[in-house]
Length: 78
Image 1: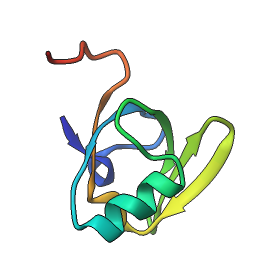
Image 2: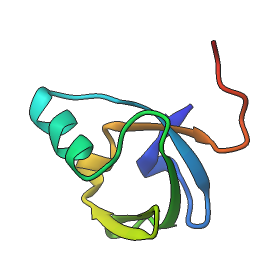
Image 3: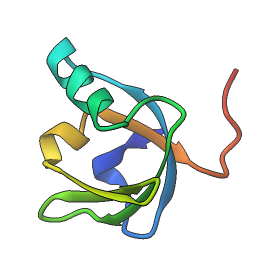
């Protein structure tokens, strides 16, 4: 597992968890970034741009650093 800021453009990842204070967790949840959701990374600099169910979202690198992600084809740990 890695953080979303460490992903590369064209990666397809699944959100494994969200870290940080309640305001950051709530902000990410309000835009649909929750554990189990699949994201397609479009770019990582200067901001992290991801696609989620046809919606394109831009996250500053600090906020994207709160999102843990795993490859979409990686078996999920139990």
